[in-house]
Length: 513
Ligand code: UN1
Image 1 (tube, rainbow, N blue to C red):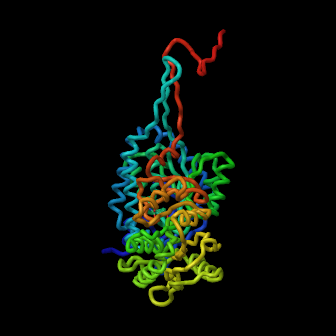
Image 2: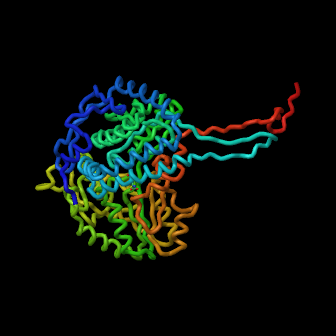
Image 3: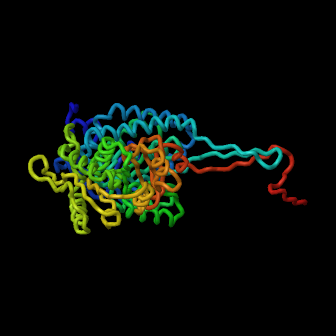
């Protein structure tokens, strides 16, 4: 139950009516234009943020570079201790931040809380990691020599994040970057700037309480032009960007032009294969949550169901029944399943997708439509839709960030379904529903799913932080969050040490003086 309103949440998080969008910690400034944040929940203005201009950005770079010189000297486990305190602060403010995420972005309060939980989890992960930034040792081919590798911090990490996970994606990057000894400059989406202000305030409390320098956690705000400050800055060795493939291609080129590193987390076109051996009840739950959760605005949202012809009608009918139960409305009301889309532009893209699938020959089995009237004044609420389609339709090949699910039919064996699933430009998440071991193993094999994430008997969304998160092809190839994703945030150095009085050369080369 929610026992306080959004005003109280803003108060707890230190979000004011007008906020400086540029911050190096306790110092904040903002000389750029005002960004107004309207809630898609009720269309009301929540608060405003002064954007970052080039001059502001240059100040941030100077402060961040100087903070790096101190921060990198602190032993990694001590940096982990700071991240532990940050995780604790997030526990204290979980309800307030979850509520702001829900109100500013539009996802359900439960999902807002879930997003803050992901932040807490990655902090715990990073704390442990701070004692495990391991390199390998190698046996030298030369006598009296020792060889090993070590990981050193990179410097400033730029983070460009999207509106749909307005707080968690930042924390996946910062929690790892900070324990690795890097400092961070974050540009949140211009659609969710207040989530950025709130997170920066929490981080600042922790760095300040520990008498750490300004600039370990920095915030900048604005549109793609501010993103460009980051991607074009030669002082930022790594840029981690989450968003559309269109945006990622631009960022990647800017970063590559200066031979920087980029970590890209871009579009998905995620499918669930439903075979004759699938548990239909589980399939329906997984597919419905995957397609309508976060109003279809996760990069891992289920967009395509690839269903065997023998069970096609059964699955279709079960889905149509399930969609009748969905309650659409204010996401802060816990009895609703589906909240609004982020803005009216997203509503237009949704409507266009429905028109396009029909124009290409598709058939809507759950009609969809924009909701009007009481409770829907923001104009951002839409009904989740289901369309029967063909795999090669242009619109089916495209990622539409909305609750539109395409039903595709396959016949024959599972390889045919895998071929349909792989035959798109994106490669983020994928799943198979089957109790047949052969089918499952085919799906996971070298000739199976080509995605970064491949699941058996669970849906495409809701990945845990412990695994490496990301995808192939136009999804961008980056991996963040768990496993060994931390290595991207560090530079590897190979060291060979000679502890003898001779200088033998490698490869047996003789060089007599
Ligand atoms: C995203 O949509 O950018 O796997 C991230 C999931 C979430 C993260 C999604 N844990 O659905």
